[in-house]
Length: 500
Image 1: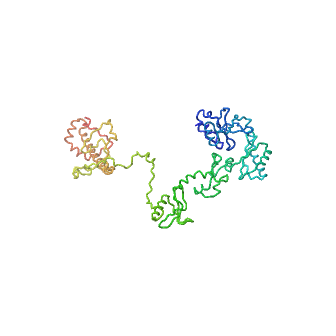
Image 2: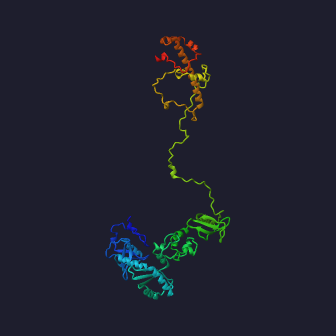
Image 3: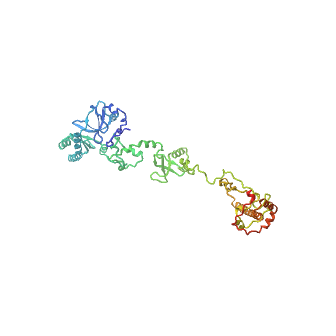
């Protein structure tokens, strides 16, 4: 958007030029809007084809001499503003002389500095002449040859003698203009009770009469101190919303209607027009047993009374429903909606508990194991090295190459789980202890056999040792049952059969 459209907002009644971005807009029209002090505007012809923009200070034609003003609008919008100001096409249009020079600006500043002192002195002169009038403002022309006096008077005033005295006192040409109270407030300016600048000093040009009926329609208390503005007249803003209140008032029942119920008769007390609620009371003069209902409910009761029916109460019997929780659309897109729920094992396949294969001291048929050997003591198990321990029953021991890598822990079979997902810790512990005791006992027996086999041969004949061991294995076993004098630190020799 072009910055020329807005211009400087230091002038009252500033007009926004929304056509300023169009190329050639300023050249299409010769008419230019020029604003002077406060709310005085004039329309002039740019006969010299000057390149003018919004905010330029120009010297224009005046009845004697020239005046200094500020350009506020150019282009196609100027004829529309002239039509709005009711300026006739055949009216005499003055012209623009030039852009203001430094000499013109010096005279203008000197004349403007004398305005306040002139107003105070003129008020004193009017008071001495006993004139019922109030001089509100004084405006000097740009060249200082003319002064305009704005006054307020309730009745017609004969100020011929006043003009003579003022002309002799100030040595200028005198012009008197009568204005109303609202125009005076617009020229002076100020802050309203709403905290904003006065409407008459910023954007209002046409002042419409305001009556107290506008306050009655809006249910505003008729307090003159609150309804009056700085001009001592009714506020112009009372007319802004009166049409909306009139339309809303048509949707409410009449104030003269009474509501008949089983408890008694209710009369109109007050209404909230915009909200659409009405308060009824059982007494006409003051509030008693007040009940507030909606306009729809009031019309329902009026229709029931016309049919000869009377409701039990004015209020509706509404069932109390549980308050619905608000739906949060953001909550549906939660960041944790894809996370796995903890403790939800319903989709997992349940592994059945393996059957008991004789781990509890019984065989598959439930009978106790008859071939179960006595368990050796813990001290004997710890004294035997791992290499000499016998293999577990039913499984021959397979020697492992020391260079062969062990099976990784991840590939080992896991212990079965029960249906509830927990390891059978107690049963596993018992089973491991029982298996460890059996392996220790078998390893100890194998070690005794190896020692008996090695002693009679003395390592001279490996084949003979095998034959003797085959034939006399039981004797060596029986003879070496009590041989426990070997220290656990001795490293037994590897059997010859294993090396072969």
